[in-house]
Length: 247
Image (cartoon, rainbow, N blue to C red; front, side, top):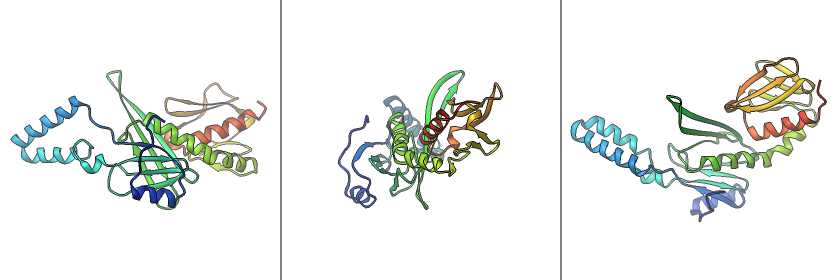
């Protein structure tokens, strides 16, 4: 991982030990503004306060959500461990602890396009644990292109074998809008498509496209953001599809 492990604060060490998270894999800090944008925000704040006090105060309050204008935000961290994570949510206080073997992880990656030109990319991962444990992890933290795939792969290692074993034992494993069983792939809006009729499963432009053998188009199209544990779903589906004869 790009972010090297660092020394953990005492509270994080105790949480990691209590939840048996294993060794620290990496720590990510909040993303800072570049110098030009930081200077622009300072300039705007000063002029608003000088000319329009209330809008200036509102803008200053909004800026305190960023680590450049808030020590509390700057002190937040995302810690990834062998068996789970500890994260300060972007909004609010406290820490959330979630293990890879029990999480349902959703991802939503959106690239903004202005006048046909790609600009910023927004990363939103929702980690839902047992009970009330929940964390939304975004591009607020540096390196989403690193920590995002790392989390998906960690969930795959922790849950992939058990998910495949459950399917082969005759159970249906639910991943949100799509479910997998030994009989085939089930979409909520379409029903069951037997493996012998599945021609292709692929991810395109943020959607999972399932093509059936009976037509030229997609049998179903599901947003990646509606699938829990995306890499587990893809790995199990590929195994099941690859071990079934085509229609």
